[in-house]
Image (spheres, rainbow, N blue to C red):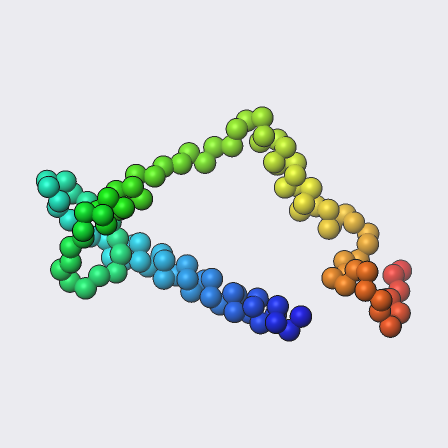
Length: 114
């Protein structure tokens, strides 16, 4: 239990810091290269002048040209919304108190529910 709390505390601080560094890396260091008459625009931290190998340029091209529409197929849309609503509303309408130690024998009496 103590180890899990330590992991959660670590992740609570690590993930926002990781996002801040990622967001800063993709917005603050935008620059261009001209390779064989083609302008390549990308972003990463760098020290003044630098070049990229052919493999790096190809990787930048493939990562920059990846597109997704993010559309959910229409027949699945109502099912996904109902599932999400069910997950969100179930704890609010359920009368049973939530216990993380379900099935564990406790040596104290449960609280009285009025």
